[in-house]
Amino acid sequence: MIQKILIANRGEIALRIVRACRELGIKTLAVYSEADVQSLHVQLADEAICIGGPKSADSYLRADRIISAAEIADVDAIHPGYGFLSENAKFAEQCESCNIKFIGPKSKSIKMMGDKAIAKDTVRKAGVPIVPGSDGPVDSESEAVKVARKIGYPVIIKAVAGGGGRGMRIAHNDVSFAKEYHVARNEAEKAFGNGQVYIEKYIEKPRHIEFQILADSHGKVIHLGERDCSVQRRHQKLIEESPSPFLTPDLRKKMGKAAVRAAEAADYENAGTIEFLVDAKGNYYFIEMNTRIQVEHPVTEEVTGIDLIKQQIRIANGEKLGFDQSDIKFEKHAIECRINAEDPARNFVPSPGTIGLYYAPGGHGVRVDSHAYSGYAIPPYYDSMIGKLITYGPDRKTALERMYRALSEYLIRGIKTTIPLHKAIMADPVFIEGKATTAYMEEFLSRTPTDLFS
Image (cartoon, rainbow, N blue to C red; front, side, top):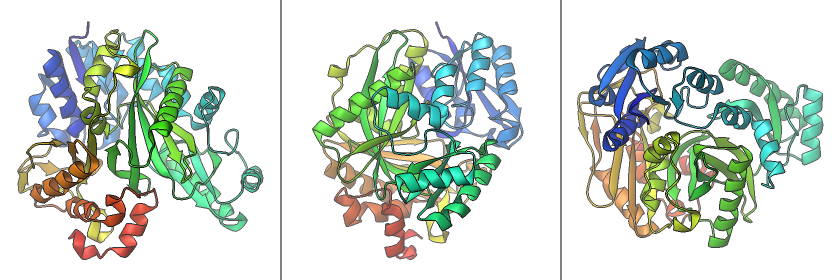
């Protein structure tokens, strides 16, 4: 049985895991960089070990130091959170070889679904629709152009090992394709050490909808419904909600079954997410699987009443899922806004610094997941997200009204944040009517005065 967990992450997700462990009666070890010595998860964990300098490459990406800390502190398991080493198959293998439980899928599943070309082929064989494109990586410009012409422009060039919008470029004709192909390869090589790319049909103005999966080690796989993540900027999600205002009950059922088939095809275990693009006609296409907990998992928790972090730990403990697909009910609506330390009035430039005043909103139907507090210094070395504001209610209208109210109460002084941007979006008719696609943010920013974000 798992009695002590090392948390190989930082910020709000590390704090979230500490809290779940405490409720389960499990001891925690926080590992931290020199920049995070004052972070809340370090203060609230049972033990803490510094593993290196401020930069991720010197700390949170140092698998050797994390494994050493685990052995020194005699932990049973490691929870990787999201980002950093959470989808690193080699790190999962290292944990397995050291007899430390990796709270996530098996390394072979991470490896399979981490390679987008292999992932697509795997789910296609399971009968899950995929976006038309190349059968795998394309290694020359001439080969890539042939694929683009065959499936028809516009196309999107994607890094095989990509993520977060890096190594991803759109081309509308042969001329632009030649340039974007080489840019994507160079970006991919620099970001991931792998310059391979593949080609897909570019679906214009789709919805980005993902399904939450839970799979135990006894063969049971279920889904917990969808999250609509269409509001994003440069492929980075800003707002997520569940259920999607676009899906019909019939389409939700079909996509949920497809998501389960995809997870089964990967021999999946633990929590994961199957991501789809959905066009205006309701055609859906698998794009990738995230083999970890997602930033936006709280909206699923509030809609279903299921604690996903606790489920991850229980699955890692070898326990069976305590519910079936028929037990999952979607009786609420939830929305999440990512609160980032960025200035949306100045092209989202990062805004690290010391928070002078921090006051989180509250009241019925409001949840805040954040590691920030008054006097906390936001380091410049990591992702700019400092918290997640989640509101929920019996319907979308209630969740929206609560979100606007909660954003109005959320006070963070001393730095710039995306709170004013989110308030403007919550008042926007297109978003209120549930019509936002992946093109929404670009359109919204082009027609909205930046002084609303100041």
